[in-house]
Image (cartoon, rainbow, N blue to C red; front, side, top):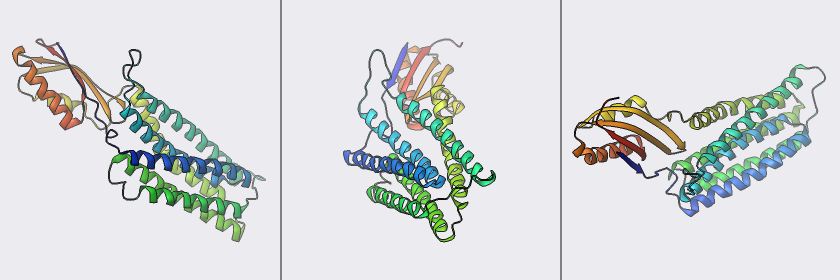
Length: 299
């Protein structure tokens, strides 16, 4: 006997239109500035600007994924060919983004190495332009913080977006420092030094995003759930004598799924036992997409 509890319950399902609009505004102004910063970095020979652009790109991607998750949580685009809809597009986008950013970071560090170590690779940098672009970036990020202020504590996505913008503020401040040092001292070496720092600052979060994306695509155990705890909790329900073929995986952010064969000794009580299992999984582990096969034998 197969029984399912397929309610999709994510952190993204209870968002007001104003929250979605705020995220769209932040994503729009951040993306526009990233383009400006990349062009300015090429024009001024500033690795620090390019590095900060990469840093902002990771944060813009994080905001974009939050917006993507909210949008698709409200539009369950299920078809006979795609029975889980398009939830995994978020994960594919995260995987692609993390690979691109890691490669970009390697390039920045390599170019910085050439400028720091290889003779003749030092380049004159237009400090005034760097400073102006960095100040504009700081203003953009402060506007983003203002838009999100007072709403970050309302839900996880808004809080995450607020933290992304806050980190961008720190990156802009670092580039401003580089611009000022170049203007007043012509100490051009500060640019590759700061660019390495910003590139390395990107790595931990990007590497974490890459690992989590691969784990989801490989249908690995969600990091916030203990396999043994789930199995033990099911076995603790009165009437259950065994659990086998237990599988737990993540469809997308905030959407975990579970299938299992549960052995009971009294089939007449199967409905009550199932209700207890579904309730326990939802309350204790936030797993709401569950399929249970009732068995009367132990494998």
